[in-house]
Image (cartoon, rainbow, N blue to C red; front, side, top):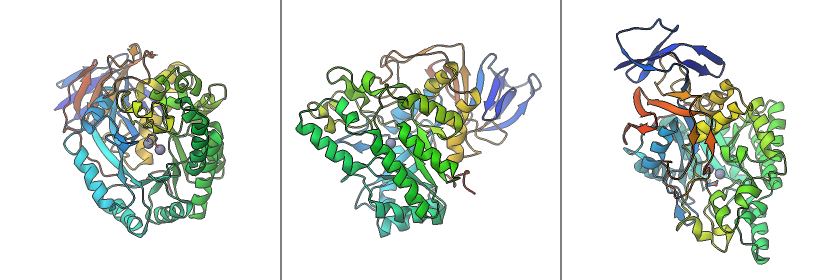
Length: 466
Ligand code: DUC
Ligand code: ZN
Ligand code: ZN
């Protein structure tokens, strides 16, 4: 089928221009000066609206077994919600736990996703056990499986944690095979000491989750990861879910030295705070228990992160979508914050929440598109198939209405969660129409796609490395 998206303002990382976009089958066939495209095809009227590449969420955890339970969105429910919110590709984290064979873990993740996704998807690999076997497996994942990035944890001793020697070995391997190391940068052993001390003092409420993970322990781990990567001949390093000013300083300093160091942040760190959300009365704050934690609104974290996005010290905004319901899941931590499953769900709202940053004057339109679509595609080897409106690229397209208004609520969201981390938030804009590989999957808030439409995408190496 051939469709012309007419009258819209096409936005990319280098700016905006009026053009009509011709979609032929699954790909973009051509861009025309307004009114110059074919007249004998179906049209979608985008007059007064933005036409942007489908957004890419480079950090999701569908069905992640974690914290004694499992993330509540399946690949079915999570990718459907993503699509409705304008995200047309996710990169989820397949998980190798200590003692597991990497390829078995990968097969298990494929089995969860296969046939269930509404949009295209790719995988990073979490290495929970760095040893001779898993290091060898990294090469094959890059060359054969389309997995070119590996997440390691400096946090969660006894779960996903890698020590510095393991980290260095994985970084050396990544440097050799061209892949990227993604780092959860928090000093886990030190955090565990603070957690035990807090619990001994009877400090059990959700807010102590944040207070026992001070920004210094994020900054220290970020710095250590950066220097370990330097020792590994400047292995490409991507810091995930960066939340704190002092951690950002470390990334900035490395980037100023020209290092292969990148970082993402997430909407929760741009907008929410330790006091207002995590510190909500009673057990309510459990909704916002995630790691890295929300930071104090009395400090400059949020302003610094917005600035980091403008200056490209932060390259990407992902969600770290890791939803848990309050009932039976977050409630596991009633009376002991350390047992609250860590995670916030938000895969449906990232496009809108970042657009609000444009409305508020914190981000340009071009930078909005760059941080949610183009850079994730380039960072993780999906470009130019994804992340750009150009002939030959997949027709993953979002028509965004700057005159709409979006209200976020558990009553209307599509994620499998019994609450919203963004309850009552209003956005000055809204997703109008979403195309995934040429198929309209959402229009005017109505979902029109299907499970099984989404395909696994093998990724190449990052575009950002010479
Ligand atoms: N942080 C979270 O909040 N959830 C999942 C894993 C992680 O690192
Ligand atoms: Zn993490
Ligand atoms: Zn994560």
